[in-house]
Length: 162
Image 1 (tube, rainbow, N blue to C red):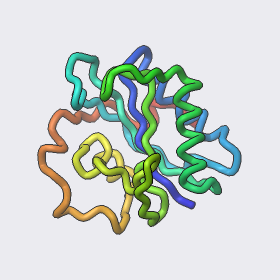
Image 2: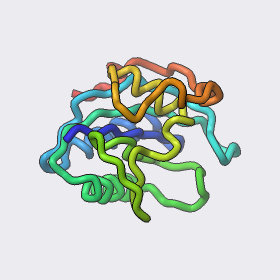
Image 3: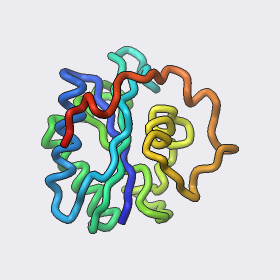
């Protein structure tokens, strides 16, 4: 199944954090990162007293179901040092499951597509980098304000991921 993940970081060596997250995703059994967007720097959203984020979106092919994939993602976050202290606060790594094929889901633990995806330029811009098309994304649903505070940072090639 094809899935799309948003990855962000604003603590420590942000480029290295992104590299480590992609590397960890590629270590998951029956899962392969197939595309990576360019890197974008983003003003913090929600809690503003923190450093700017670096964000990417990756496309993966996986045989995990959506719930198992979410569990694996949470494990990667914990393994990379994510500690949840302040809602929308600083973090070493944040990996969001944005889309899982064409699956629509609304449970206590997982909502698909990601409920705030259409409000986040740091998700929508990198998605467009990887020629993303999905029935859940319609231009009329995209808010112009979503793109404020999002800046190109560097090419995906500078992530140096094989």
